[in-house]
Image 1 (cartoon, rainbow, N blue to C red):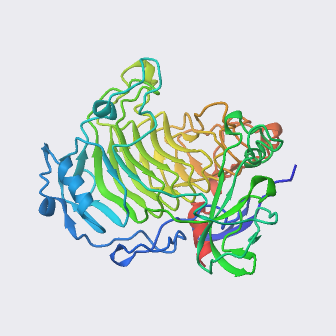
Image 2 (tube, rainbow, N blue to C red):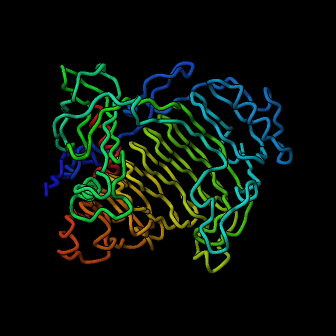
Image 3 (cartoon, helix red, strand yellow):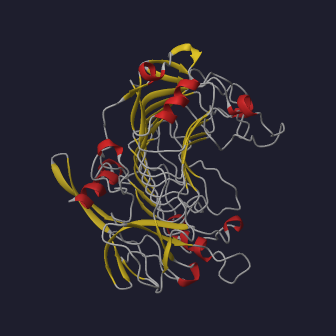
Length: 515
């Protein structure tokens, strides 16, 4: 087994009236998630993704008005579905402003283009009211005791693109092994790329039945925990994005250090990064569903809100979502930001015992993608899974958020190197309650970090087999930590809740990186 060394940095930050060294952290600030958002682009021209957190989200002026230009009523009675769908077809790029009002959207909205922003007048001023669930619109093939057809996807507002990893995007193989933290790759042939180009490093788990099957999944679990039978042989597990710093013959220097090893048995390849949709935003509005009782986990009718899939450099900002089964889903997205999303209910939905005091399924979920940021969220209701990370997601950040009784759901499937920073768990009765099928590995992959996590009571750590190489810094713990729990899977535990500095590790790493 190759040891998984912890790449370390020392952050120094001004905390109050004193300057304080926060300590040696088990991360590298360039490996850990960045604030993955883009620069403002004039006229929303399609440009290469920025993804470096060097500028805030854009605030381009609106050109189109849903009432003025497309004759939506926004009166809470008239079905404005046709007006919105027509506007989304007509507007090629720019900002579509949706004035204050309640717009009844009786159909599912599916969008397949970017360079477009939907902007309201503010949450609870501009309200998109979806009266129909997915079951109402399309039926539900699930029988009484089966998982609902709409438990996981899609949404009632979907933005779906294409982000291929295939023969059309492949540039070269990787000809020599490299270690986590390295920046130089030896490729199989000279390729036509230049400084500043984005490339994707892809690796696959060896096929089922072969000698090495499961070795890459095992690596994502720190080579300390089994991979999970259902994950064996998965292609394109590793999908790491970096800009090119320099090229020389068949050598490529990356701008960012590798977060994984590169090994021949994992068939490492270099691909172009060519997402079909970038620069989509939805902001400053509410999405409401009618109140309905939440029956139980996996019995959802499909009041699902915003779903983004296979898109990049896009955002969901300043959105209130009410009475949802599923709030926001990021599936195979890269460099996307979800900021200041509030999830509410008009009244308690958990009226049946089978609901187990939960008012919906998922709040905000991130899967498959890389470099996604979820920040400033407020989960004002209790869901089965409040914030979730799953399916090989790399470098996800959840920061500066809160919930009434927040759980940080690790949904298995080798989610890797996730940061939870400066969170308020509220009641704190279920901080690590997590789901996911038991045949898909431990709940967390390697290097998840929990930094400055607070609750109204002392926090209880998860079971010892929750995941490997985990880092708990700045938590007020209500238990004595056994040496076995701390060392068997190489956890780093430093409670120090009263003196944790910096307050937000993500922001501190961003500042350090941009200096």
